[in-house]
Image (cartoon, rainbow, N blue to C red; front, side):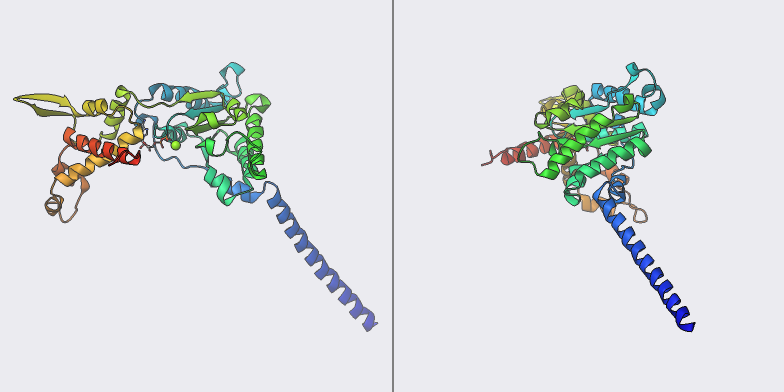
Length: 347
Ligand SMILES: Nc1ncnc2c1ncn2[C@@H]1O[C@H](COP(=O)(O)OP(=O)(O)O)[C@@H](O)[C@H]1O
Ligand SMILES: [Mg+2]
């Protein structure tokens, strides 16, 4: 009798242990399966790509008025009013895919950041670094996860691909299998956002310096193409005004011209002499000109004159004085000479 009871207890214990092992094994198998399909890891990586607005505004961007108007009309207004523009009459639907293209340094990424802030919707920035480095071989699943999350949870939403030429080149036989499947997945999902009559407020924004190298199929799915060109002198003036808006006392200066004196507008003169410069070039020029202005002032003595209790950069700037055309000119010459060296024209 006792023997039978013990045998029963042992078999129950064995049964419980086997059940536990099976349960653990099953859980492990499920986890492995999940990482083979689109799983929580992919979703987590995509959630890490959701950008917190940096506070950049369209108004901080100089020139490009037509581009800013276009983006305001076609992206910001529809995403702020999804029920009107996405669920209403088809004639009101904005383009689902927008391609910004133009030379480097013209403000494409800056425009995207401003859209992230001003649209007030979720903004997912997918770079080739995220999609290709850590997740090498998994990028197709990341793309799938991104669009899935956007459609279900994050909408209204912008999915942003900066420098898409790095990931969306024309497909070729030389592509590794994972690169090829990434491109195919991207195309499939771009088609998907137009599904259900294009009612989900998800827009794709992409930037490139090199639209010609994009896969033609990808170009077709980004039908609204906006050219972000180099600024003309009026736009350069606008960029310079924005760059120097915190400068005190800059603007009009009097220069000696032979025996006569002449009043000039500093920014206008700089805009005239910087033909071919982009917004990024002008930003770099401003930084060099500012450093020449500091070099000209006797910084050590000026620092001694600051309030020792609360030394403040604004006080130092007041003592250093406004940025003058001569600072810009020295910076310009310095830039031109370093440019010619980098182009192999140095002696
Ligand atoms: N139109 C512009 N107005 C003001 N700053 C600009 C403009 N274009 C470029 N910049 C400056 O140059 C930097 C680089 O520009 P970016 O947007 O990265 O150029 P792109 O993406 O076209 O290569 C910006 O962070 C900004 O400081
Ligand atoms: Mg860029």
